[in-house]
Length: 94
Image 1 (spheres, rainbow, N blue to C red):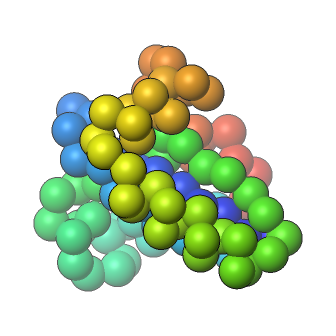
Image 2: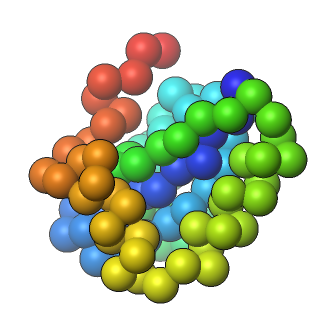
């Protein structure tokens, strides 16, 4: 299973799009700042959207598609499934 996901910070100002084969582990890494870089610097660790596929090629294609979208289109996508911008990682099982 592959996941394309969107993370944000506490104020929902910064959007980060990524791909992983283990969403629980990846959210943990972001929350505990294990991975150095953009998400650590801007405290991006709140999971607000994710999609799944069994095909890694489709996941990569979707990630690139989302990264090419305008900010407003990304916001509309998040709000279509998560209008309150809740942290969806709290519902994931580890």
